[in-house]
Amino acid sequence: MFGRCVAVSRYRTDRTVHIATTTCLWCSVFGPRPVTVVLLREPETSRGYDLALVTTDLHATTGQIVERYA
Image (cartoon, rainbow, N blue to C red; front, side):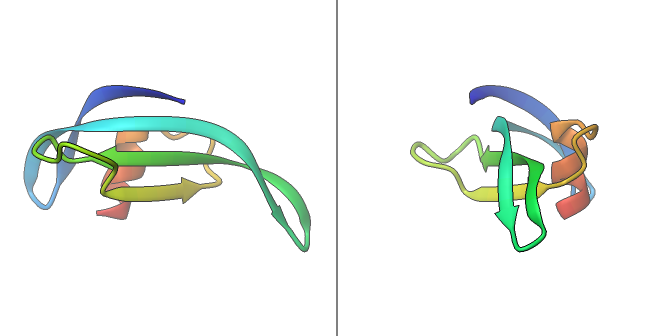
């Protein structure tokens, strides 16, 4: 998992947020499936992450994943 700053467009504004991502396996009754986990922290937050997102779209960029959620 690694972190970086990414510019995203949410709620009709452009902001820079801190994002950490990793790809892992999600186990379900249908078997394991690869997913991307995105952890997002607002710039004014000093500790921890504010939001965790999980997607099965492994080709989407982290910015696209955050914008889709918003």
